[in-house]
Length: 337
Ligand SMILES: [Zn+2]
Ligand SMILES: [Zn+2]
Image 1 (cartoon, protein in one colour):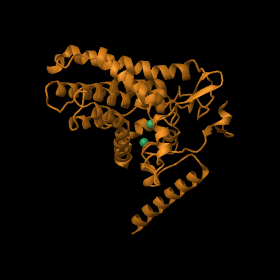
Image 2 (cartoon, rainbow, N blue to C red):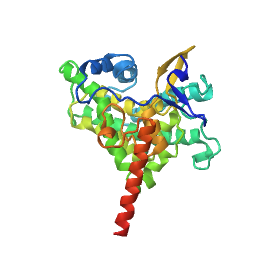
Image 3 (cartoon, rainbow, N blue to C red):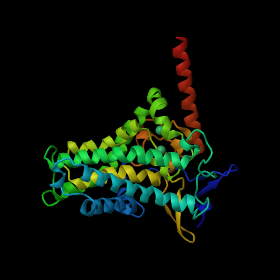
């Protein structure tokens, strides 16, 4: 199998996969068999990515987090330990994707959406270098803000400020809550993403993430600090719903790690000879290309319901352009009126 089996490369050298077919859940009429296959199948909701993120979260809680008793008082040593651990983990995850796809160029441009590599001489970016700019915003802003949410949440759990549960006392609830976290993330992200596309916030905050039209793994967390605060605030759901530290750690790591894959710039990663596994997010790639479509993701069909879905097809492109023209006409009419 090659990229030609999964999509087409146009004359400009950009590659696009088949139009996006969103997850067969939240659809009417219901498609229970397809939904089950999507949930348990490979690749699907659980396997491999959410299972991998969950395994990392469990290991993090077991081996790389102080005990709740130790976290009852805010002390520099354990806050610094969590900051260092989060820095190390994001370097492993985003750096790992970047190393394989952009430094080693292990598969060249096969399955790469854009035929361009990342910018090295562009004054729009800090240090005129897209990768260094993206790494800077990730390490200087994303990691400290992620760590602050984690430290406060774990401290609040250790002191009984927020409600907690254990696996032993409520195993079914414990597992269901884990399974709902990626879905909740999608809903929360959609809401804050619509908010920061409001022109005053776009111009001052979200523009920073959108400097990355052609994205790489480190672009995922390259955001303005205000966007990081909004983005990681989803974890505050655990201040209301009884949770365990594993829920908090999984939620925050999912927020921090998943965008590295989602912004890899590649639809598939070649693992062996002609075998490639799906890793990319063409859905979000189209958001970076066109700005005003696909604000959410492809499990909950929010963009479909609100008329901003772009599946990558010519028809969707036409519909999006008509939407732009109609909005321009409305703006002109309201000015004239
Ligand atoms: Zn993005
Ligand atoms: Zn955006």
